[in-house]
Image 1: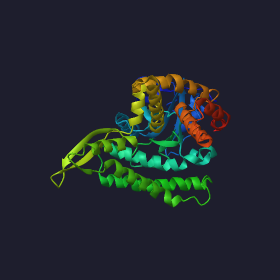
Image 2 (image 1 turned 180 degrees about the vertical axis):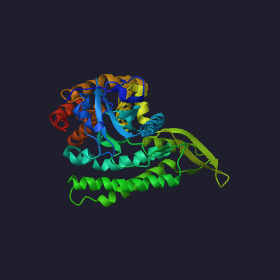
Image 3 (image 1 turned 45 degrees about the vertical axis):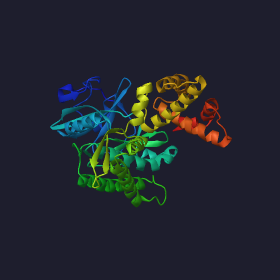
Image 4 (image 1 turned 90 degrees about the vertical axis):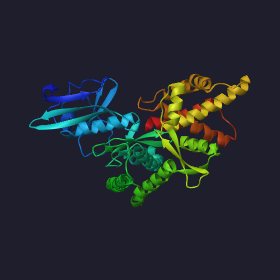
Length: 407
């Protein structure tokens, strides 16, 4: 590697959020594509396709992604990501932006925090150990678009390349990555939603053709059907979340059912609006959805853990089972918070410690734990009775965990 020459004099301006390094020791006067030849902080990590240069740098235990853009665009995208963060939407976390001089050219760079445990879409097609997640990828794309549109975000460039994916209790969650063309409003029109879906159809088709050209798709893979499938999933979920119901004034239970149905999908309900219907004895009911963190927020308030949404739902089911067992044993009603602390102390933490022994730091503890729960269920179904956690751990370590080490 050539001599490493930091170039802070080429740094014209920068905005960096508190709690992160100043990045002053980076070779700002060198084009991003050339940093790997002169900067020891550069890390080789998997990433999706991008129309702009992207690389990763490390500081202590923290990883950051840098994207080089035309002058002014990094500020715009940084502001979009800050808005998404404020609205609690699944996206990469913005850290800062910089304006730098490279020879006679002025460019801007966006800095974001590396999204731990995430992977680009092509990893789900190119790694045999991840094949079972492919179908969940499509559902995750639909859910992400619904979340963005509910919050008033027009993506403008929805594609597989502009999305990262995290495993979530055997499924996937999609995360927004690229916001160069995005707009954030109080709400978006139906026309803007349709436009976003049309862009998604074209971009997903193109992304799959790229994979096909690389030989990464199975034979006779239905490339033409994938975009329409995502759209149909989107439209079904959008209807479920936004539909109005007509109820009688004495049907209080219908309100509770509506809230519970949305909570089951992971959505938190901010408020319920009731309006007079055409017939005088009925009301139109409309739920105002806040975000998709219902189970995650509940688990975090009880335990301090912050997993993905479906992971949290599985863990809450375990906590409720633990509460029922403790209540029956002590012949009194045990508070949910007490059952949660008991579960965290006696089950989750010691189990995760056993499972993570010898695994790389990149492994998500919550996902490994949920895989264990799925394995325990499978063993119990086969045996015809509950095999117990200890037996499930032993069998999981001998079998499934080997594939995690190899993945």
